[in-house]
Length: 109
Image (cartoon, rainbow, N blue to C red; front, side, top):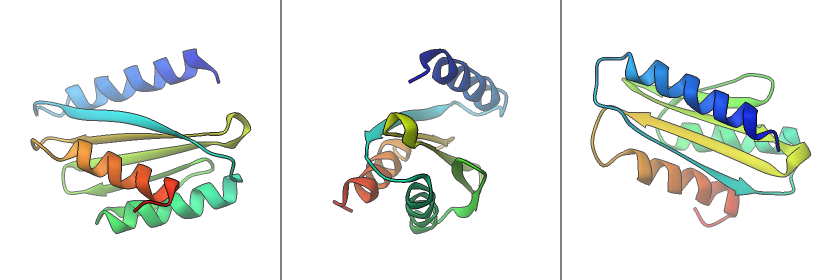
């Protein structure tokens, strides 16, 4: 996996979130998987929608907004990874969202 890419992406998202004027509550996590890009994207859209976010997708990412909160799921099948970023200005939200989305990919949620 390209660690420089993930570091740059994480830094860019942190700057974006820091400029919203809210105290940032952000987290990220990953899931090791052996699924195709199409399957990853379908699961991502489902997981985003199940959390109540407006689901959208790009070429390799599913994402959504729910008020001031957002989630980004990046599918990297060539490295067997799904990376999830969650942001909310509200306390006690991000970890639950992250774990439920991870659970969808792991088949436990």
